[in-house]
Image (tube, rainbow, N blue to C red; front, side, top):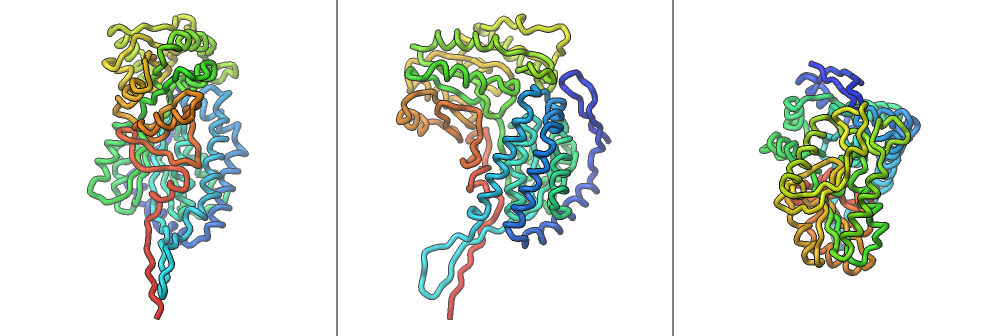
Length: 460
């Protein structure tokens, strides 16, 4: 059985690959399990050397990889190379901090005893990565898992299957021992077989809430670790003391970059009533500056969505909101081009929205935002928390103390002030509610990829 990769740009076939069978899964996991035992004995400095070389190998082919990203998922070519830069930032941070993060944890001295906690690798880690940021989302678990002494089997989205092959090529170039990193092209059924296999010790999944639920069911009862980075409906709050020009520019970028297909992209905006009209007009003016078109064109700033199905979902959300009284503020005919296909969606800003509309409560994952006026911080906090998701939230203000007060009341994994849609590898990446469970990046990211082993040594 084959999987076929179609480009959202024009529907062309980019690649065809045979899907792995159960015997292929068995062979890969046997290889991973055997390789991991030796890899776990490899010194961290040697692991770091190899992982740095793998990142070097990816950087050497950055232009080729960027072109592939655009072809596979439609991001404008002028932005695609930035993903490899981001991969380098995250990967190198996690490599360089592995030694301290994985060092033995010494407890207070006690006469006659040597007591400490050691971080022991789990074994075989399965990483399931999505298409929207195919390298950034994958590196979050691949590099720290390998640095911690685990072996990794990557199951990438079939929409970006070439990325899995690029990772394998880079690790082979770097001299990673055979079996420590592998990839498999799978469908939903065989993915379930992979994650539930006895040889798998940990699963890191990034994707939709429905996908996370399916993974949870697949591993239920197997007593293995699981990290889920799922969806978001991330809010931005523009306080009355915000730098309005800065807020408009950056919130709009956070909403529409990657055609809005970002797990931590801004999807709903709350603006203090004193700035509301100015914000809306300024945002509309900026939206008209986007160029919707073929992402291989260097001047394009907004490409297609990943599929016609995804684009239809956005169009339906907008239609439903308008039918309920929302006002569409952007004349989409300004962006229409005859040669563009059904996967291309013009950016849209909706006003007169409320939380009875799914545009403000359900994940959109596309180039549309709803904007509401609020009278106070308290009202903004209530609305920001009125969501089944909790990945990030951004506060736009000149008052850091107020940002901290508001942030402490928000039900979210990350709080930003005057920025959004960014992962700092030094900080824990986590979500609450339906946005997921577990923690990636930072020194804390190593905790879920290792198990604590306590040593209690009594001297006679």
